Amino acid sequence: MLPFPSLHLCTMTSIVPWKSGQSRWPLSVLLLYFAPLLLMEGCCHAAPSGPESDSCSTLVQSRFFGFFLSSSVFPTMPCSWTLQNPDPRRYTIFIKITKPTEDCVPSQLRTFQYDSFLETTRTYLGMESFDEVVRLCDTSAPVAFLEAGKQFLQMRKGPPRAGKAISDGDGDFKTEYLVVAKRNPSMAACQMLCQWLEDCLASSTSNRPCGIMQTPCLCWEPPPQLSGGDSCYHNGVYLENCLPSVKESGKKVEINGE
Image (cartoon, rainbow, N blue to C red; front, side):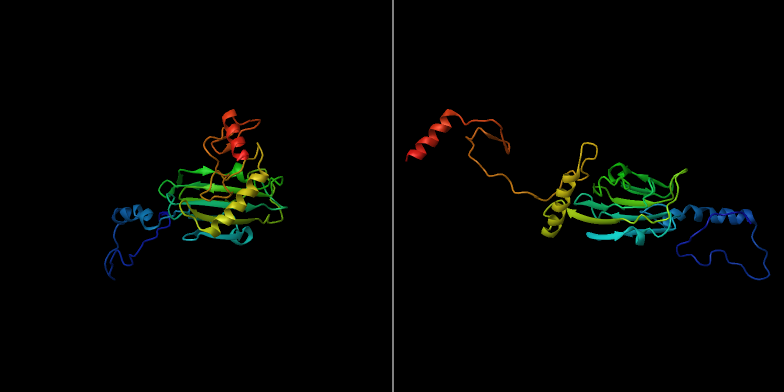
């Protein structure tokens, strides 16, 4: 028997009828019959979360907030967790990762976003890596934040690279996620997102910038609105070492005099 790849047929049960006493069809005829069915395999099984060869995979859909521990989502290797954006034109994904405090293996976790997964060539379309932002084993920043605007965000745990020792521990870490509307976001989502942004900016440095670039929420009160004639206030910023003009000072004196 020829070493065919695993064939999964959608709804077909009895394809080639054969009765007792009849000679079996030649192998060449069977190959011609089954060739179109082999080509149909990609149509029957769509894999938006990535290759189906993984020992485990989780695809989260229609969820706008949640969290998980890596020990429960990545029990084996390789393993993947994928969050689907319901509509990238209307929503943005935000991620908070609390890093492990010990037993962390470098290059074992990959985090990236992508538009779609092409099963025929087994490639990710529009893939963008977040590994340099996450830096899972960098304990100088215990928390990492991400902002993703594409259709899928995936975290994939695999065996360490060649030459890297496998740790006895699991290097457990926590992941929280928010899917926030770009227009009219909910108050609860904004409260959490603004707290994330504050923590992200507080821990950011020139070598490790904040992974949240912009939010649809108003996280701080806007500055007081002053009159257009105030020359020390320009485009929402108070100018340093600035004195009001003589005309403005005269107006203030006249007002005080009254």
